Length: 458
Ligand code: NAP
Image (cartoon, rainbow, N blue to C red; front, side, top):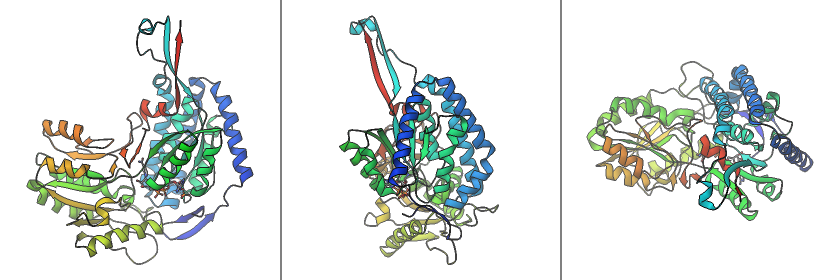
């Protein structure tokens, strides 16, 4: 994919970039390695000071950064600004909590292991390569960068090719906050150039957020080199509504769950399983809510969501809808891309979706919901788990027994009850099955890229 800013609202190419040469890549890896040696000698307090200054800069520049994000990938200005401020909050969270998350622990009394002293330390491991997607250009990268830098690692960011200016902004932000030069840099390279980087002994680990194919490719290269990976991949999250739920509220938030970020969110609800007792009441409100959304100019007030980020992305969504329609799915609203400039796609609801349709199993990265009627909680759980993915879920019930069951039996990295699935700096985030492995955020996330080191003393 060519490295360029192409405005999804107009389809216009605004700025193109040449990929870094082999020499430029080598200089950045060497700088990251040298910065790691410097960073390893700094204290949590020093790193926290730099992180807070970087957060202040981001907060000050939030309007400009938001305009840049909207121009590069099409989300509304309001949601882009929210993302910038959320990223700053995440940076402050790790500035405030990294030392506590990484305080050495004594898992058992030293005498249990014939020692006079025992501790488990969480030391940094070196340069980590981060391959990131365009859908949350700032937040996806920051939720790797903030814990990694606070742990004492350095980072090389290979961002998606359609958000190069957001990537370059991030490549300077941490140094502007005070981190040593080289601590966090952007590599302008295409996806195909990533795997060979894992052969470099100075790069110690990798994290990738993106599609299953890209994740598998990075994990394969890392595996050959015995290097750790964390993978945050796709999802076909469920939204389950049971009879005791507040159906009105569930239907209102069901719309947000599907159209947030123009439907291009890994944790957006994609499959809606609604109990037959409340199906009609939910479906009427949900379909009306989806039909009332406005897909339009992302800079304008009153727009619910902007265009899809890429022309290819919109084609993929249309193909999934057309495949379902040709095999008998009912289109309750939406279903066709409008004519004219920009990669807009309307909020769409499909019913009568069957297993032979691609959309039944594949992730649809656009504002298209599949609505299913189920007879029982058993059927809801069984059908939820009949998926190759397991990222998160949103379940709606006021029955305590059902809450406990859903929490235990949904096969995913998260179960959000009576609310939208979301990421919070203090809460672990990640999936199971094809949605990936490892966790981001919280103490679990920051410890992924550490050397869990036993120090035993006779
Ligand atoms: P993608 O094509 O996999 O791209 C993601 C990143 O991987 C980009 O930087 C891309 O670079 C790079 N890449 C592509 N092919 C690669 C390869 N063979 N080797 C190494 N790197 C490669 O994903 P996308 O379609 O743009 O993004 C949407 C996907 O990300 C969805 O499946 C979504 O669910 C997932 N996602 C998951 C999470 C999560 O936390 N679980 C969060 C957000 C998104 P180029 O741009 O240069 O191709």
